[in-house]
Image 1 (cartoon, rainbow, N blue to C red):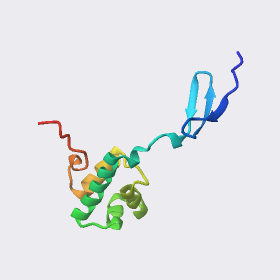
Image 2 (cartoon, one colour; image 1 turned 90 degrees about the vertical axis):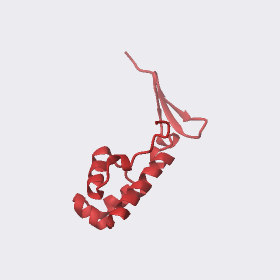
Image 3 (cartoon, rainbow, N blue to C red; image 1 turned 180 degrees about the horizontal axis):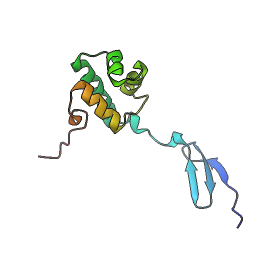
Image 4 (cartoon, rainbow, N blue to C red; image 1 turned 90 degrees about the horizontal axis):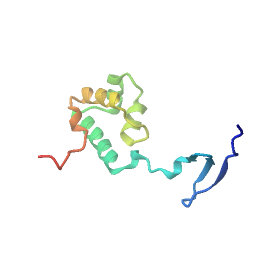
Length: 109
């Protein structure tokens, strides 16, 4: 069976796309990264606050985590997303519960 050729074009947002039968692939410039969302920015603020409250430099945290200092800096400024395992490691170093870093559910009693 022969597949129809893919067509390319520009979306109404100015992004390029490639369209194949049954499949549309959009470029990343169409998506708003959750790294820049207000919720993730609040998380990053809490991550920086936790380090400050622990009285640790980025270098000291990096040594505790057995990482390079740029790892901590990139996590704190949003260049690198923090996954759940890394969050557990940060929380342990900062002696904070995971809930410290998570948004408060204002709808609960």
